[in-house]
Image (cartoon, rainbow, N blue to C red; front, side):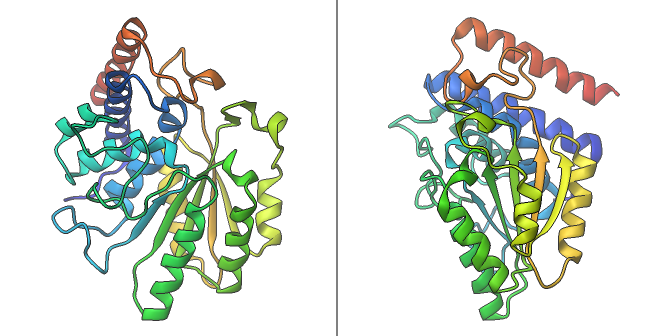
Length: 281
């Protein structure tokens, strides 16, 4: 597959948004807010950055990815389907006993999922282990992860951050989805974690701050991460929870709620309109 850039990446991200919201609507449960906020990064990883093979999901030399905020599985599933790991039609069976797509990523049953996640705080440790394994084995593959800004209040996140710095894991790149909201409200009210940049820098991480919906900035940050030697990289991406659906944007209530039929009709129309706008410009 040829790598996607610019407008093509943005179009793919919005297609994934539509598929994710559709799957959540059909399932009548799921987590749309955080799924929509991280999809520009996810799409860029799978359609430009990572070295992988959908025809051989377990290829030993592939780059690894861990969705540490595992409740946002609809975003990952949509991207995996669009990338060719399994048929897009299977997204319609999200959270269904008739399908294989659980509410959180399942590495045993979903092609392309490198780690089962859902217990917040644990995914980053796995990504650290994958990067450390590559160093130990003399392999060139890289390890990527996406964490939520609410998730980083978990103590295990900081244990993983310390370990990554200790082992000079410059083959590890972590996105932190800074959308400012979590299930109970604003992160600054629930458990303030800022300033994340200064905290990570104090742990000897290389830190890059970007607009998480600007694919050109995402690509530039990933390139900078590859050039950074001797320490891991954290990309702090400022995002909008519920990005692309007007009534979900910046609303904590859409952290873990499925749209009803009327709401889905509005969301579908807005996302289809954005796809058309991007394709025509």
